[in-house]
Length: 514
Length: 98
Image (cartoon, rainbow over the protein chains, first blue to last red):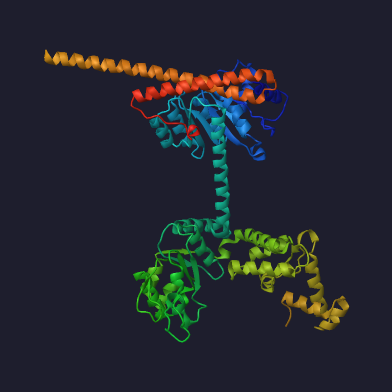
């Protein structure tokens, strides 16, 4: 038994925790037949060690390496080298033991001998990849034919090393894998960051309605068909459009958003399709339109329902012919854009009323998705509130939270303006509140009035266990004083000991200023 | 007669190929064992050299290491011949590639 193993057994026998972040490997001898006969108790402990998932992995940030070889000297030698490189190691002398370790431990890398007793190395490799596809496998082969190397690679091996090899060769390969895994991990983090910035991560919500939406976005992202995004105002239609674009294969190409509702009608055509020099007064040179600017990428036509009917036919032609004709130009310009359109209007009704072209509607409505309103996913409100508070806190450097009562009221409110209204509400409350906690009194009047409509006794009722927020007490004191003084605000301010400007500001906050 | 002779010749040839194949396999297995021996020896020597405090013993460790490298080179050489005899191309370990 190696010194390292004795150390581990001593630590275990002495009640030391398995895999302390000392960097000492468990030295797992999973059924290691070639180890000097350990006593039953020790072998039990060693067996347990083999099966014990590492608890210190996150702390020590070590990668787990499993060495599978029937040759004891190679197993132990590789183990010591791997530990010096920075791995946490497990060893197994045959396929069965290797599978047992794989089933119970999060193994990142397997160093696998291709010639094992029983199941052949290639079958073991296949099984390892089946059980843990993400595990990196390095095969050790004693028969260095191109054929065997190709076979191993085909089965999913990351690298191979031919025996005999020395310490430096082994270290080189282990270092390379370490670098590869670190790079993969960094890539994963970066991808996640990008996703958070411009992918689904920008859309907040864990409700079943939102999960369904994510699935549709994911499918839409990998298609090239036009998508019609439907949803009430403030639900985040542009955010969904961005998610579709930035999760798809053309994420590196432009994403151009156009609000058809805000463009000056006389300028929409030149904005969309561009113009040539001399097309109209002031057209001093050729200018590309937004559709050309989006070439290769995505154009997002927000509020498509607001597009004038004459331009609808021009847009339809551009989409059908995949070319645009700049204003004043004679030559069509080819374009390759994916179209995403959004509206909060009932386009079917607009079609029935003749306000929207039926053929354009069908052209845009190849795929359609509807974003749920906030009242349809109220369970996401705490998540959204937390997100906005965190974002505002980051920007202002002041951390704020929300009282239970205020959150309860927000959960009962219907949010006709959806997420945008919620965001504005939080921003306003953060601006008005003087303390670290947002109370009901800091919320907009519409929401406070909602409370009184939905629960007339609420303003009288004391919150939990007789504790009333100071802001609420202040509001009651001000409003009560004005009532007692028959509307004499100046006298109320004097008696309350506050300035008249403060009183007027407070009344404005409460929505009680007439 | 002609057919019988041809058949027995074919049988002898098959037998010869089988014997040859078995020999090749035996050499291949032995080479694998030798490769294991030298791998264990070289890694252990490398680790020993790293952790050796007694300078007077270092020359012995170096000698063992050099012998291991020589033995390894021989294994690779024989394996190369064997692969050539079997019409198989040799794959050089990436770590050994320049």
